Length: 397
Image 1 (tube, rainbow, N blue to C red):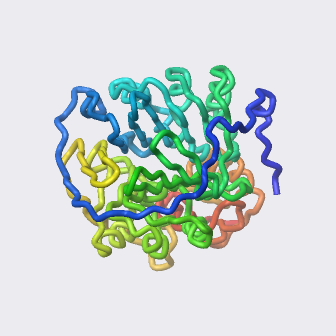
Image 2: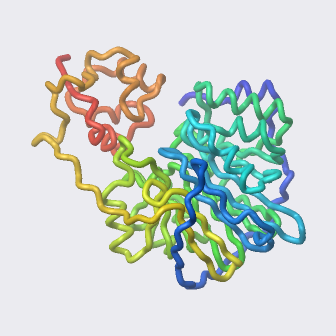
Image 3: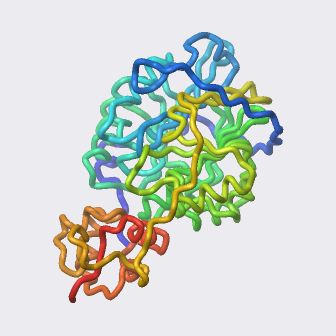
């Protein structure tokens, strides 16, 4: 196993802190308030400005930002004149809309900025956030990346003297009137997506579970822990991918509402048909940023209201046609022959970054796409994603 040490973070003295003192675990009860779906007026900017007024006092607003094929979720509340803000993920590195959205929605400071894992579609604009707002703490899982995006985040943490924390399962914190419990990971082994920081945030009788890109095996581990998973809202893992949101996990959380973040007509097919079917067949209202734009939940801790930037209905997607062998067509002009392609070429395949590309080449030959599970960090669920994408194919040895 590789030794995952944040060398840059160590050099820059990014060490864990105790700025927010853990509190004792709290059990909760959820109510069954009605869901009100109201359209928000269109804004001239890419993202809407939602009720910029002091009415947020003692009302929690949770903004699921429309950041395309990425994630960004803002928790915002004021109590006794003091504002409390938590940002979970920060969009894709190719965008710059998150800072603008926070500014237009009167964010002055951020208590905790969480990067659930080091993928660029989750920490993409975190460095911009750190440069633009006072931030008390940054939470990262401890898994690393060689990407420029990740390195910029580390530099921004250091340059702005922000406390650095690697939370672990069972940690609990009180942030003003909000109670935060860390559901995952218990430890890290270098599996960035799977070991996403997963949290439950509770305000009164209303609660939210968010799991980043954690997969079904990680959900099982959460179920097996002592955590109280039942929550009012569930943000679907991995943008609604079939790698996440198992039936067992859905039954454990028992959400009244499910929300996912995905880009319109994204190349991954998110949300996947089986996940949409599971949610809808369970009778759970489903919202997605690809269809509804930015989604805002407002709650007083007992009841809640949901407003969306756009009106729309989430439809099941038809499964992509497959060849009889369940493998991509090997003579397709655009396919990438994993037995012959260069490092740069195989990096175009979903889930194959620079390190996995090197492993892929070293482990040749392959007789089926299923054999990509030989690569560290590629399991059956990711192989299914690779097949669905249709880029990878098998050629001669």
